[in-house]
Image 1 (tube, helix red, strand yellow):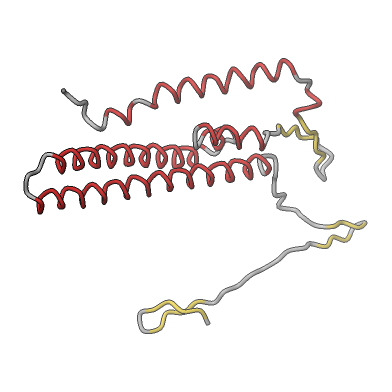
Image 2 (cartoon, one colour; image 1 turned 60 degrees about the horizontal axis):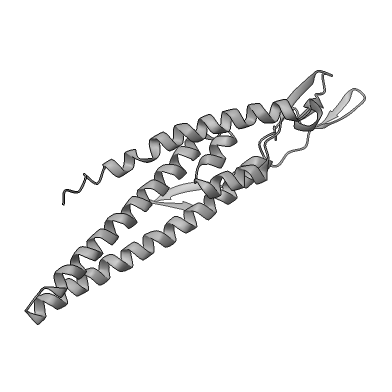
Length: 196
């Protein structure tokens, strides 16, 4: 039986990505038509009395998107680099788990057909190693998916958060600026970086 090259499995998600991006775009266009402008926009007034329209993103929607495909929630909130990192890491670990499972099955099959006890034990040990590595990659994939979900949820909450460079309290013509400063002096002594 001819098996395809292992790298072909990295190309499988590409049509799905384009489908999801197209689905996300059409879904958001449908929502814009259904919801009123008052429900999905916030008008904030800046100190110069100019109004700004800020679009909100649903944190729960970002969380569920990342639960389905890690990185989709980050793409939804506009964090494309994070989306690429989460998605690429997830695909890589899934492929790694698939590859380790294949090696596990091969070594297990080889061990069953060996006449020598020593060689059979060698193949069984190799099969155990690949099985453990496969299981470890599956757990890491689950952890990465949870991290992606949490990150997308936080990014959904922080989507419309803006830091104004003129943060302060104004009273008449006087202005009080509030801020926090943290200084950590570092020095290099004998080739090592130490805190003072």
